[in-house]
Image 1: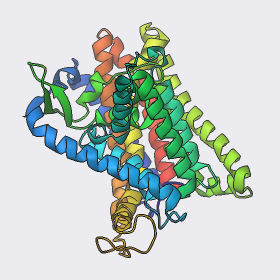
Image 2 (image 1 turned 180 degrees about the horizontal axis):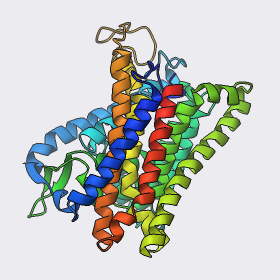
Image 3 (image 1 turned 135 degrees about the vertical axis):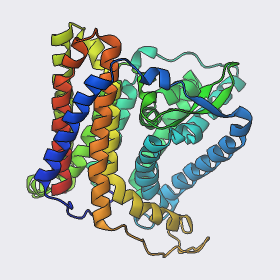
Length: 435
């Protein structure tokens, strides 16, 4: 289960065709309503937000959270090589695949970029930068031209381990992956500084994009001081940083989640059923590439239509509408991983009492039982996540269109994007039904 990042799922509470028609209707109604009622850009102005607390209040919980996250990082690294090599008794797999990969997405989309506030990779890179200055070799600026391509590549490598690698859930395998990642972070931090590391590290970059959906964020006051600020959900996507490689990073994440669902479907089991070991791994790697290509092609169609209607350059449109992909990535993550997170986050709490699988019971409950949510509730949450993710994407794309295009062309430019949203929705529902 951890190897493919998805748990059990109950049947949908209504037939697939009813959900599909209902979702298409909701998208069309949203599209029409936005065209009539949303006639000027609103998200960028709302993204400024309002202050809640200043840096003096933030400092203590930030330090405590960063210290706790870094300590857990070290515990997982130790468990990888010196704990029992069993995914259900070692703390590393559930921490890596559930608490970090799934939890940071779900919490980030609902609340804000929590990962950015406690990021252990940033702590590690800060230490490397401090060591660089200590030896009299201050870090230089890294190659800015790389943009988010390193993050996109790193995300693809992670998804290969999660979805295709024959021993991708084994603590020893994950340990080597984590060790290489740590050494790269130290090396880049020493050479180019911690800010360059977190600006190109896959988890940090992707979680920041998803966290832009949340209502809470760290901003600056009038005097330049740090503040915890609140803003309407989704508004932060209007000011989201988009660099070369940003679109590919998000498409890789969507494609990975889609392939995760497909590989657990009846069709997926028929396609990959005769292979095993590394033969299966290479076949699933091919499936992952095809999945990313399919979701990328759908986005390509939407961008191409926009360029035909408005005359905007393709590369500019490709990047301008990148934020509209983030709600889709979040919706797919909730739909496919909600039950996994509900079940295995409890397992993580149990593993804290026995992180290395040595039979300890430090805090009690090491052998606790998982409480499962009713399958019907899970199904409704999954369907709602896909629906609101795509409605959110249509809203963000519409706001961006009326910001950069003249009146009249803004709505026409989104016809193909609406088609893309319908296609993504149908794909997501099909994966839910067949997984």
